[in-house]
Image (cartoon, rainbow, N blue to C red; front, side):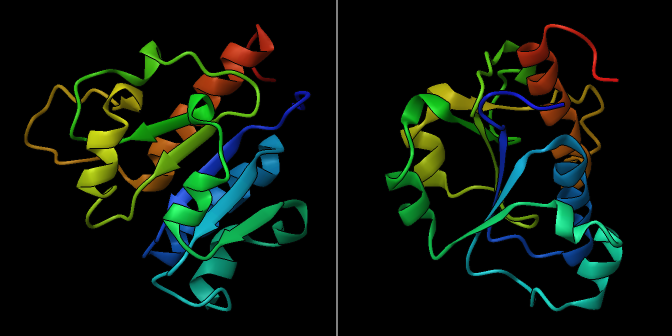
Length: 159
């Protein structure tokens, strides 16, 4: 699936190598650009990271950013979509356009509170009726949201 402008997944200071590896594999499979915002909680040489991505790394376009501020300053605000458990607006309410940036925070803390406040109208969540569950796995969440964005931009189901 290729659009005129590729979709983008942004991981802000990811901490768990297998999550990042799985998301990298997802990005490779969907021609989505992966943005990694430093500092990372692991080395990109980590064996768990490489194992999760299997032998697909050569198919993944990865962009590294020194800081979240540097990333934000380089983007058009209308292309930014932030995902958090700290809102009630479902991800299905977002209108993703080609080139959208799907932004996810670190596994243990999520996105910074000041960013969520600043961009509150651009924050979305995956509804979870069972309140005993705090959150979904980052890679699972990224996959669900990415495929919704692909669906919206393709006008049909992904094959």
